Image 1 (spheres, rainbow, N blue to C red):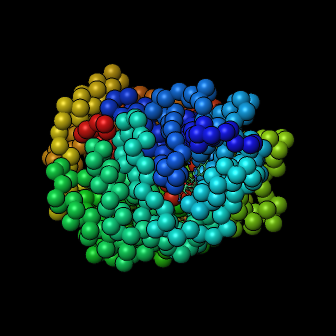
Image 2 (cartoon, rainbow, N blue to C red):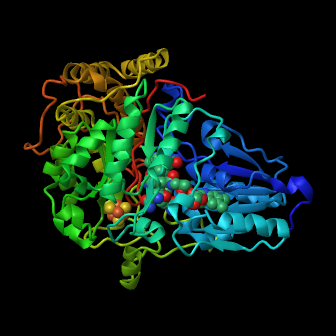
Image 3 (cartoon, helix red, strand yellow):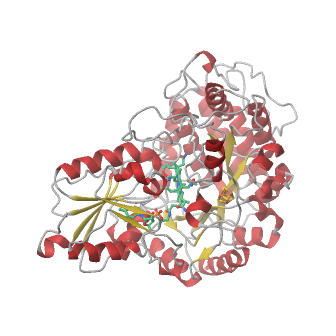
Length: 575
Ligand code: B12
Ligand code: SF4
């Protein structure tokens, strides 16, 4: 691991490995749009910005179709990754190690499974890298590199530099900005507070605006705020929103935003109004469960205290599409939880749902408790086993109390298909839209590119038959009638819907548009805004999966929050 001599030593190759096809990747929708990926790799762009200018940095993002240059002259290979990229991370790492390179692994995967990752790299980074990265580079040049660089503290967020957008090559749908780190709550399953703390750390507002400007300059029409809880510090959030609204007023076309936040935002109408005024279109909320005893068990007190259906309706009335993180498999959950979840989501009218089985993530209080109760599923293979935490298929890593692991998995996957049956989805989506009032949303300009996306999407629905086509045009018609400004968003949500349906029918015969099979478990009390939308021939929820082994990657698992990429805006290409 001695550095190569001279300038050649000062070259760094940063790699964002390919994500497996997933709920969030929108792989089945992206080809209809001008984009190659939804999000740029913010972690690596930040690492690049932390690198002194006398190092040459190259970025490779496999997600935009770039091939990894195994012939690179760079002696330092840096690989980032989330847990779901684990196999690809290790594959790339092993190949570069066999070529004699210094392989460095960092990011969320390394934070979660440092000991496993350490087996595949020369240098492992644990925790935030704002301070440790420069120490590593100094050690590297001095030939005194350590095996592990660990950040024991939480870094001062203003020390995190703006990402180096100049390294980006592809066309990304959305920009990404992080304003805060941390969350004041203490949900038992959450690794965020373990990694980023409960004390909110804030980026100066002028810095946030500069980052937004930089994305705007790249032609990105929409920015995601990658905060753990955007309203974790309400006073800061309000100041930021005021500044954003001011900034956005001057933009032609305006930029739209989305983020993730806790449901207690509902308690502050001023905050909700500011979100609307700043042009926020959507928010992801970790709701987790409609069952109060499950919320109490997991210490999700902010949800437990509220009437959540009412709260969601109120948030929607500020013109926000809601996506929600829902979890099944708490100790208070029994097999009736699946119906309860379905009925709740329909009543609340939450269109996009990320439904996961509860997962005990290492280092969390939940993990510690289940370990003490000897309920963790035993690992079966060697220490080089990639991971038991990579399940995005409803699988979990502990023994639930009132269900078997298999029942939980099957229930979760059946519920996913029930939720994304066209009628159920349409009801939720329109219920959300119909609660919009006083719409001031300033949509992006209509361009040839966005029209092309619309045309391709219409063709895609058309190819799936009359029911699908009718669904598509009817949703657009109703949106036009109720709130024409939201048409671009609706188009994108319908694109996302195609992606979800494809995922859900990946390994199991499931045709959402097949002739109707009566859905036995629908709650008659739910909001029914789509009456008359479907005629004969439409399926409410043709689920025949009981006897089958259900698919992988149908619905993501893992802790919330995480956010559904909001509408893929097709307004302009990133240069
Ligand atoms: C934005 C975000 C998303 C976005 C964008 C993802 C993307 N493709 O870029 C969306 C909504 C799509 C998303 C999706 C998912 N996400 Co997410 N997401 C986040 C979030 C909120 C912020 C990430 C971020 O940009 N941070 C800012 C940058 C600057 O931080 P960073 O990447 O960690 O990088 C720093 C260090 O880690 C380090 N570093 C990073 N890489 C490297 C590499 C090297 C070599 C070195 C030295 C250092 C280093 O340097 C940086 C500066 O300190 C985090 C929570 C969080 N606070 O991190 C969750 C988080 C990363 N997501 C998580 C998960 C589980 C997911 C999903 C898998 C959910 C699911 N079950 O489907 C999906 C992935 C699917 C996909 N195709 O992307 C988990 C990751 C768990 C894990 N340990 O792997 C997190 C931690 C949240 C959580 N606890 O639930 N996510
Ligand atoms: S799950 Fe969400 S609300 Fe709960 S502590 Fe984690 S980030 Fe905060």
